[in-house]
Length: 160
Image 1 (cartoon, one colour):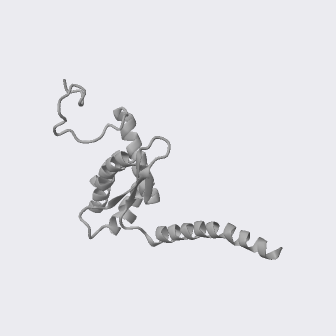
Image 2 (cartoon, one colour):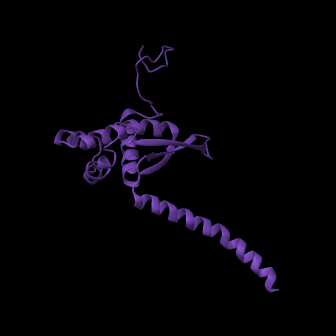
Image 3 (cartoon, rainbow, N blue to C red):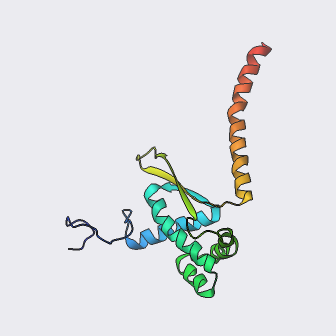
């Protein structure tokens, strides 16, 4: 019985995680996750999904570095959005020209509040300056919101 572990047999040479989904659902979910990764250059998800999506993302970036027509058609088989494939080949692949792998990074986060699932951030290792500046601006805005209420509370007692 080769039923993926339910018979008590070992899973020798069986790659990939099932993620509790049927094959079609799992493939589409991972493709959507990878598209989000390439559009936003960072995505927050569960650790198991991040590890599985990393496999596909690394493969797509390797094809992007090849840059030929066959590689582009292979990428279009996995990512149906032509604008994302264009970004992979024209913007992201040149960024990783000197690397021979390791285009993504998984940063582990704490457990998710609802079901205690281990969470992670899947991100590209080489980020553009625009993405880094936007992240810094969001961080500064968040910090300003934290300090604003404290300043108002301190100002009120001194006026009275």
